[in-house]
Length: 317
Image (cartoon, rainbow, N blue to C red; front, side, top):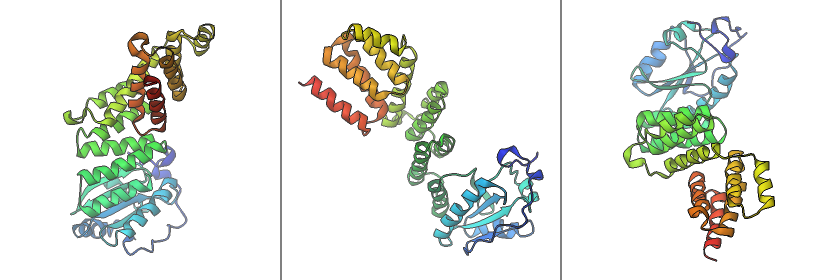
């Protein structure tokens, strides 16, 4: 199998760099070759964990990941070491370890690979990866919290793929972890795969079914399903309201449609207007839907806080 680099280019046909990147100034980072790999990695990992970074001078993501790894390793002050493998010069090592794309990172302990990842990842996740090796932990609440934080950071930055990998990593160590289940389900929702999101939620362990993060994703799924069934177009519902401002069904449908189009604040406004005009309409349908929106957004979301205050003012005025 040909080794693949960025853009799908076979590594065997990748252009050779005129010279390798300069060796790191850190005493904890070194380059290796086929002749020294056993001593540099397998034997050395019996004393401290060794991170192996497979890279090439022409690989753009490698230039992003390498310095972040070196920085994190240097900050560990000898509790973990790093070995760099230039695959242009050491394709035999890459073949033996079945490296199919770069950058690829393996972590070795006691002569065996114990962890790893592919592709450039956020610096926070690089630090968490190195800290895990330093602490000797593989799983546990501290490690889970670090990886979850990195996953949330990646998700917030729009890197859904990296976030999904991080959430899945936690689930490998702690099956059914509610926040990891919810996070992975959110990644599927973000990519438009509602069915996989639903199936992912079923993985949550029994004591985590009522976790706030899980309930938020369940509420978001419910909202998406309701929005998909909203009848009519925005213009049609707005025309009905212009003719009759007390057409609460039209306003309710308009709220669902606005939410479906990404205007959640607009949906909140319409539902609150229904409560203001007729709080008991359709067995409190508007208030109940507001509660579902609050769950989906979470209690600390500024939109939740503002809308809750407005709802309370309406209900208790």
